[in-house]
Image (cartoon, rainbow, N blue to C red):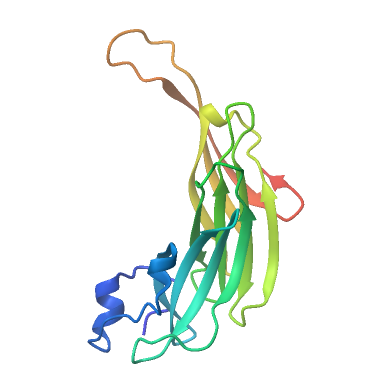
Length: 193
């Protein structure tokens, strides 16, 4: 079976193994969203997010070979939603060797307040190894995270592309020109460029 390491799963592959339909246990009626399907430690899991009562919560739920839920869902991460906002997203990455995985999320900011990013790293025993919140040290309108990487030792890195305002004029101009690429080691305390 494939580990969570590749994270290349879809509903078809997940359900094909036992040729049954996934039992959602009613969560789709309550506004819970399916984010990812996968295997971890040779067990089937679904990753779900639930925007409820001012919070966005990310869960991991084990499923049996009959595609029915086993036990209680495990809360992996959560953040508070600003009043009137329902945006924000969770994602999951893993180390190449499958020994670690990380939940990463974005909390959208406003024009004057940049986006906030969060992460939690877990080992294969689901023990939390590290966690943190951070903001990019660059203008949010002129930078973006282009990739996330989790090392085999559980260290979390991001690649940030920084842009400068375009000086070109015309109908088909680019509003951002490349300035620099930064590889940043994200730790619970700071960002190391």
